[in-house]
Image (cartoon, rainbow, N blue to C red; front, side, top):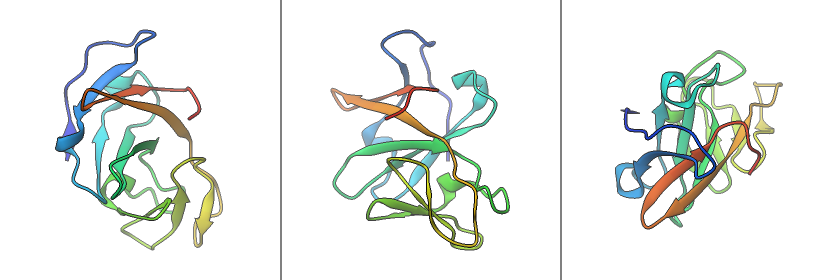
Length: 120
């Protein structure tokens, strides 16, 4: 799923979705056209309701991490099962060997705000 909402970037972040738009344990992709970044960004929701953001491209075979699934503190790539830490973007499971980029996310009043380029 790709979200297409946004209100521009500023110090309050970019509103990218409602929390309810993101199923627990799954993710959505936010287009680089909205974020102003070089890569699309995956917004991922843990079962506890917290949201995290990583570049949407697996560093192993370029699959969309938004199409993967969240387990614990990791997202698992749907193609070859590489895992990345949601907080840091570091590889937690092979075959990927290069980390991805983590971005800051805030949830306010049930809305998800993304801060591209800011570390969580």
